[in-house]
Image (cartoon, rainbow, N blue to C red):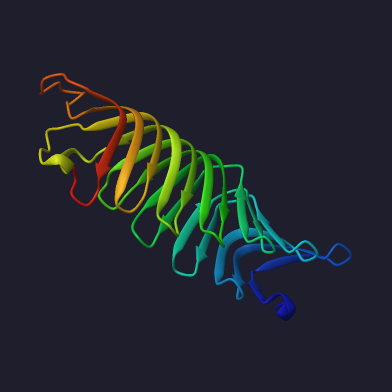
Length: 214
């Protein structure tokens, strides 16, 4: 227990480097950040007390205030800045049933609830899949900004489960009510089986009303 840092840590093994104030916890590690309501589960966690940084380069799960579940490896958690960094892939689930697959590397600002990633695959509660590059996700405002976007709608989303609706574009902005895409191409044609007339809809600006599904 580290009362002045509001931290509790449990593990089966530990190595303490007193001069550097670095502790390495191993085997069934449970890290509890009482101040920020964060729990971390891993098989190895390094805590640098001077820098107030937690690091792990093995599979790790992070729970934030019952709002987020984060799975990744090679994680760095900066308690002072309230930011999580990773140079590897990550998976984040929020309390609204959205799943964020983050590729290559990502940053998660816990205070602002903003995620930045070079590439991301987002699956919403309706099973629609959004593939972005250079993405910024504001979970608090439920807003997404990114480029080189492809949306794979759930097949029956527009009323016909034989469809294969796909939407592509150069840049996109999404919020709670609508999804706006620029330089867009849209089709509901079944690409794999070609069980429909081949057609495309091209537009400089394409808007999808999520509530009305229009």
